[in-house]
Length: 278
Image (cartoon, rainbow, N blue to C red; front, side, top):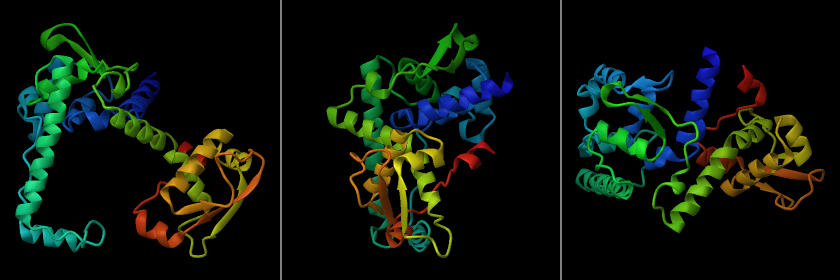
């Protein structure tokens, strides 16, 4: 039973908070509340105690919802840009410019969340207590009872952001696209795994069919199709047939542009079904 509950909560984290899109529409501080509920429901008072146990949220529910921005120095920026894993040598903005840009982005983000709060009739998000109110109003969390004894839990039937928030048509389209990517990225990663991309003599082409991919990856053919199309959409893989219309049994070649792959993909999750089960 404990294992089932843990799996249920892990699925909520993946399907609602991450792939469902709520992570993109809630303040970053929402992770503090989510983390407190990963194992079981908690009372408001219990969550407050968990928050106070961290130096970053020592004020409990009254902790600031928006952490102060780090004031960059020119020396820090130069060191970061020199890091081959994280640096961007094409970015030559000085510290004053970088700090101003981050401040503008933060102000725009707060204004966006304030708009959601106004739409839902709750207070603007300034403390973690306000974050809780917003999450309950969005029906991402449930709260039963009153005051400190009220029990807070994940809403396992949570709506999508577009069903609650006043998103524009462009935002809704973007959100649909992101959910589509999120749903098929693991399978796309498994297709990449069939190329053995870490091998020195990795193949440039893979001759296959949607039916064969489906059998190899333990998914249905339409999922294999969507995952392969995602690889094509990213640009470092190409196909010699139209994968949107090709029949499931028809053979095609999937080709990898390893130079572009190495340049643009910093990390790839090679989650083959066997590895996922271990």
